[in-house]
Length: 84
Image 1 (tube, rainbow, N blue to C red):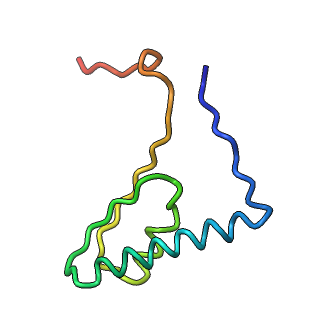
Image 2 (image 1 turned 45 degrees about the vertical axis):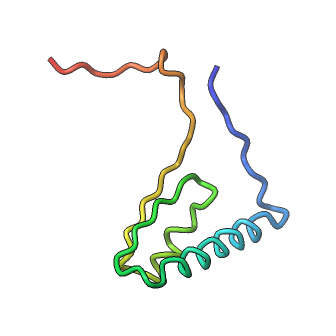
Image 3 (image 1 turned 30 degrees about the vertical axis):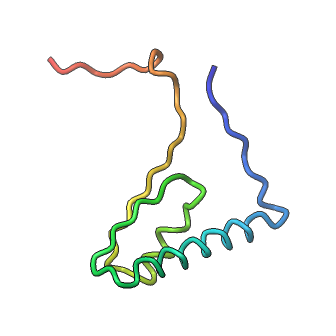
């Protein structure tokens, strides 16, 4: 059985809320790192997909990484190439 997440419905104002939440997190994060000379940020999951751009707009020198935890197939179904 594969995992199929639902598609979010952004037609009823959801996009505005999504953007507002990402902006709030960006503002809080920028405040926390205001005195950090070389900030490094790890953004976890698609809930904050807008966050890297929002951070880089204000702090272009910041190192920003994003990790999306998207569940895939179970390990027993995966195959890996074997080097000879």
